[in-house]
Image (cartoon, rainbow, N blue to C red; front, side, top):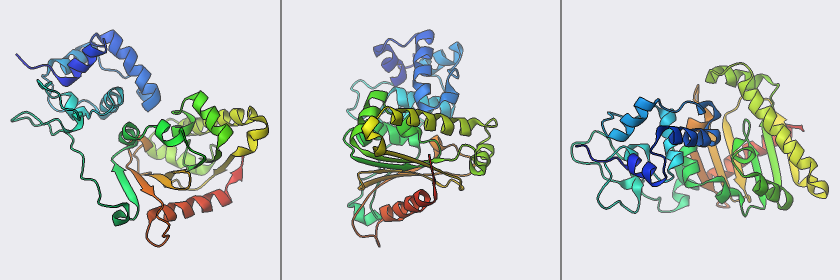
Length: 293
C-alpha cells in the first residue's frame, strides 16, 4: 500500500479532500495567482490520482503554482512525496525517499553580505515563488514611499487588500508607472505572450481605472498618488519601497511575468557598486518621460 502523500494529508487537515471542495479552493487561489487558471482545476480522476501517490513526475506548471500558493512554504515537489512520520519544521527541505526520482527543493545558502552580490539579497525563479516568501503585506504594510513601474502592476493593484491599499495611499507617497494600454508596446508584448488581442491592455486599463477611483476618494490626500504611463519595450517590473528596497523582475521572451525570475536588492549608498542604483536610474528615466494620468 502506498504511503499517504503530503498533499493528501494537508488537504484532509483543511477539509479539502473531496474534489468539489478542492475545485472551489483552486479557483479562489487562481484568482490571486493568475486569473487564466480559474476553472483549470484537475478532473476528478486526475485529482484522486494526485492523492493516491501513484503520480509519476509533477502536474502541469499551472497546477504547481496553485498548489504552492495554497500551501505556503511547500514546494510542489515536496507535496507529492510521502508524508513522513515526523514532519520537518521546514517542509521546503523534506528529504526524498530512497530511490525517488523527485528532487525536493532545498534553500540555497544565504549570501555572506549583500555587498558581496552588489546589494542583491534574494533571487527567486518566479514571481509566484517570490510572493510565497515576501507577500504584499510585508512590502506595503509599513511603507511610507512606494514607486513602481511595469505592465499592469498587479502586485499592488490586485494582490494587496483594498482596505490596506486605501490606508497606504493616505499615508504614503506612491508613484505608479503603467505600460500604456493603448500603446504599441503592450500590443507587441501581448502577441509575444500569445494572448488574445487586448488581454494585457485590459489588465493595465482596469488597474489604472481602479487606482484613479481610489485617488478620487482621497480628497486632500489625492496628491500623494501620482500615476503616469509609458510606451516603451517592457524589460523590467520594478518596485521600490522606502527608497531602500528594490524588487526587480525581468520580462523574458514569450514567458509570462508570473513565471519570470525575481530579484530583491537593497540600497547600499554606494552607487558605483550596487544594482539598486542601476534600476533606480531606469525608473527615474521612464518616469520623467511618462505621460501623466
